[in-house]
Image (cartoon, rainbow, N blue to C red; front, side):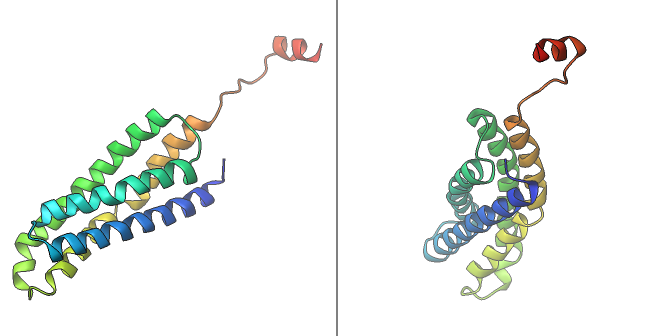
Length: 152
């Protein structure tokens, strides 16, 4: 397994790519369709989450049990997703009416991005603890009896 700084770098790149995908989808869906912020940010969240999980699973933490990783990923990511969706919905009702219509999609993507930032390191810490822990194998310390048996 790669050292923590390499895992953090890979997680950062995966998160940046996923955030970019989500931002583009949010901007396009909200700016060019008639859907509301809740629907647009949900679509954006889902569009970024799938590639993010694949990058995290196969690049940042390339081993471990799929079920455990998927369960942890879905739980942690859903919490972050709910925060992003709630913030974009609040922004649509509180801030966007104050802006010209051309700036509303841009402001909405910024509110979505603002919700993603604070949870980034917390997500890494949880993922690293769970994903890396699942890949470590347990090697008990040798006892005098097993050390003697191994020597013979």
